[in-house]
Image 1 (tube, rainbow, N blue to C red):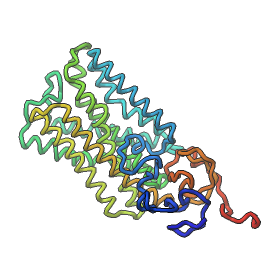
Image 2 (image 1 turned 60 degrees about the horizontal axis):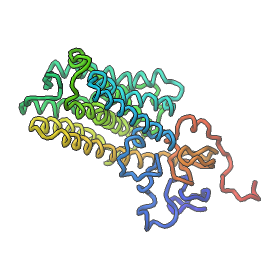
Image 3 (image 1 turned 180 degrees about the vertical axis):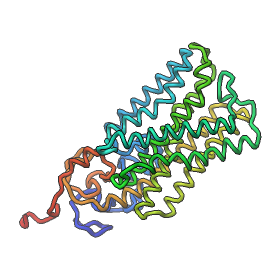
Length: 384
């Protein structure tokens, strides 16, 4: 069939395997070419759906995504059990490690690192930990707004100057330094797609988050008894286990993805807006949390504020990655492969003609299993 949008001769399907456009009528779905009703990395979702795992774990297939969701849920349940048992120190440690460890497993499952696991993991996750240690120690020397009185998030009040440091200068400095491990990654030309930049940036951000959490809570971990009354720790454990690592990873991932787009000569308003969004979201998260704590707002509303910031950041990442995948996957050649989303055996270029997944977001094992087709897959039978 001939694509309605790029005019290429392509295999019959719901989606064009060349440009990814949704074929047929556009009345129901809006713009078929941008197809924002079908997120390019996971076509079963809308681009504006703030899903954590399909955004930050883009290489995982449908079934693997569910496994990671269950693992994350089990981790949160473990933290809750430790909290109810009064084992706050153990709950803090599990909270700090939960998302970084899941991401490390994801990098192994998707084999994003090609044949260089030690180098890639060392320069991303490990490099983020090193940057996190250095930056957090310097921040604590310059200014430490946390009063360690059993709960390090219980502040008696912060001055305007302190708020400017905590809510403005620190977030800006962190977002300037966190991408460095990914930028110094050797052989970056082996990882050209924007989705690779996103994953490396998220890994660096999560490494930073882990180091920041352990250093920030070091006094608590060494001073708390083995068993204490649970109190109101559940709110701060939620921030530590969920919202803080997601903010750090998402913001750094979007900045590094933008740099990857720039290397491909695709820097535009969408990408520049991504950097601005990452920095502003971090400022809003830090400053807003501090102000709400200072004014003694109910802790539940603080979590709602943090969730709203992280959700908006995830949606912008999906928006940026979706359009990057539509652009970059269009240049792949025809090959026989298995779609990691719908699991159909297909002859395709950059997109699955059945579900529309961008095949540049497939796990590396599936990319390696592609068998190139020299002849056009739409040749008439009598010509073969």
